Image (cartoon, rainbow, N blue to C red; front, side, top):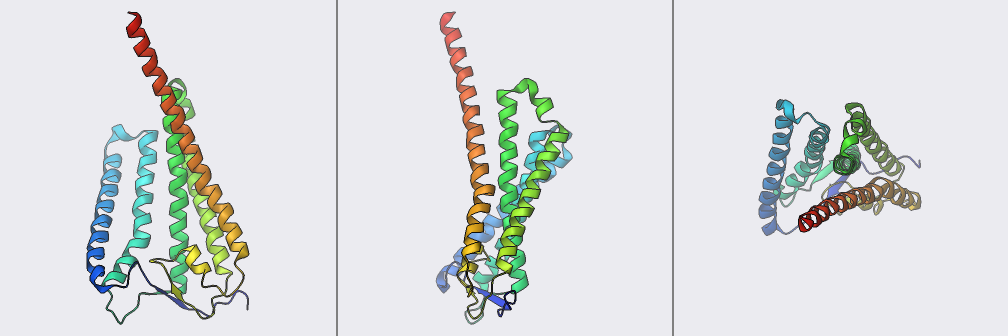
Length: 240
């Protein structure tokens, strides 16, 4: 009984319930989604077709564009449907579809964070240790970094989704959000969510906060190296 959910579908409230705002918001998010999709598709096509761009940096950028394209496609279509639904109709999503959306949302979030970390490391090596770049960022190392990024995304999303699946949803099925996310679903659970909250804190800290710290540290070293070069050039000019 603990693993059984009495709720078979959820109702997504969306961003607003005011009818006069739905069409403008629909057009705004539609334009943003189209621009995002076209931009990422352009990057993907250019990197694939241009052999000069087959370098580690553009290899990471190619994967980042793919992740960004899929990431926006997980949330936006269902959110856009909520804007054009008739007033009497509700934006309903099935239980399994909700869990699927939850999984892929976090998979792409965690993967993107780790790919950005790999890109920061790539730039750090290229600027701070250029002589070691071909060794430190060989195709084999780049493939390992990318594989690790996707594995971290896979594991984090599996943990999040698995912890939500163990919850029981009895009566409430109205999600106060535009898509299925962990925190709005925890509010609907009629069982204890202490373990989920602890898991959310640990996994989010590991897969979001730690990569963010690494990214800022890498770019801090990059900025420091650039300033040192600029300072040396300015001193050498004064001497001559």
